[in-house]
Image 1 (cartoon, one colour):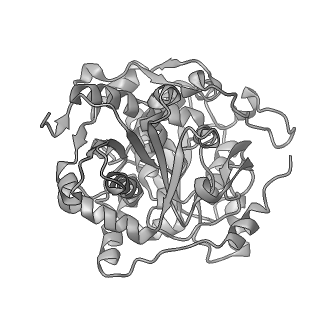
Image 2: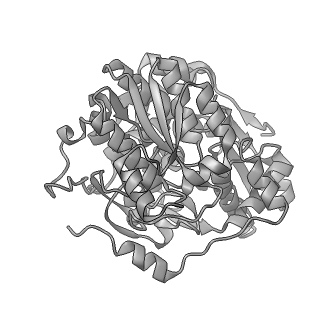
Image 3: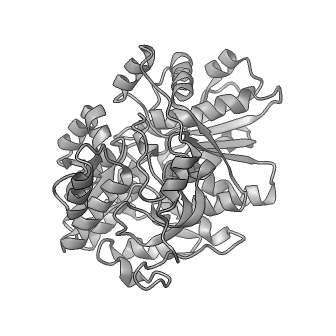
Amino acid sequence: MNDLKFILKEKDIPLAWYNVAADLPFELPPPINPGTKKPLQKDDLKAIFPDSLINQEMSTQRWIEIPGAVRDVYRLWRPTPLKRARNLEKFLKTKSRIYYKDESVSPTGSHKTNTAIAQAYYNKKEGITRIATETGAGQWGMALSFACNMFGLGCRVYMVKVSFQQKPFRKTLMHIWNAEVIASPSENTQSGRKILESDPNCQGSLGIAISEAVEEAAQNKNTNYALGSVLNHVLLHQTIIGMETQKQLKMAGEKPDCLIGSVGGGSNFAGLVFPFIKEKIKHPKLKIIAVEPTACPSLTRGEYKYDFGDTASLTPLIKMFTLGHKFIPAGIHAGGLRYHGCSPLVSALADQKLIESKAYPQKQVFEAAVAFARTEGIIPAPETAHAICAAIDAATADKKEKCIVFNFSGHGFLDLSAYDKFLAGDIQDFHLSQEEIAKSLSCLPKL
């Protein structure tokens, strides 16, 4: 088939999200209440989440209906196209066929909008008037700002300070969508002030920004917290990506040999691959690759342990691949991948060897991004470029003909300053020593 785009109709938007927990051949380690050291109960989460999202977080039900009001907003950009990267294939001189699911067509330019709309809807339905959150590169902050604006909710975003400085136009878009944006760590919260007391020049991390947002939500009755990745319900909302992809691959007459997604917390990776996990269990030859930066290698060099999801130890303990909740990554431009841990669901799949993981340095990632931009015409976000890097490797590793599918999680039109630095030769790689990782892991809680 010579088609370059495979496009579904609005009626093909899935009616329900897929919960991978229903089909796993092993039991998931439960989240732990750090105070009682016992498995987390629903009541433990009521201070910051609406009941509907708590139920989804703990559900093992296979299908969870997508509310009509959420599907109505999805129709602004969904279904998203599946595209074949023929020009990239020619450039690489590969026999493999490379497809990408283009989530960059959402109003905010990334996959994050899929869960932002759902979370804003459920909070609005249960009477919440305001949401606090964190953001790394700003894609999640933009998505939640847009979603809160759609449903008439207030929004405060704690943006990791290094990204706050690197990516000013993402702040502009958040402001357009009526959100307040604060550089983290900040003087607004006790956890932020504590960090600044010990390090006044701290450039921040997702773990710190999460602490600030959680603290604010816990202290204000009308305010809830929303997370853009990691948690089960967030990954659940993203499975709409993979379900659409399955239909589109059928249109193309294809079965994937390799599925690829970049990983920070795990949301865009899970969104693409979770609907294919049953296939992976039946047919182990299907390769599923999670890609991360060498500067923040939780899956490739972290430990599978219980840890806090934030720096100030305010969250429940979750079992995940982690570098330690005190870990502060180097200021790479892929701000959305600068997280010390990884989703418990993705981590469990990695522990069970159902997925594999790779890490790439920043320069190689930008080389892949520029190659993609020069052949396919779209500028990838630095986070997305990690998946492109792995797709290029998969296509050129041998002369075998393969069907490779990756998630194009977002565009990089607001990351052009990073591309300027790369083209000028000013991008540097960051390599972690084993001693640094061991020091960071020494802070893991003892259970």
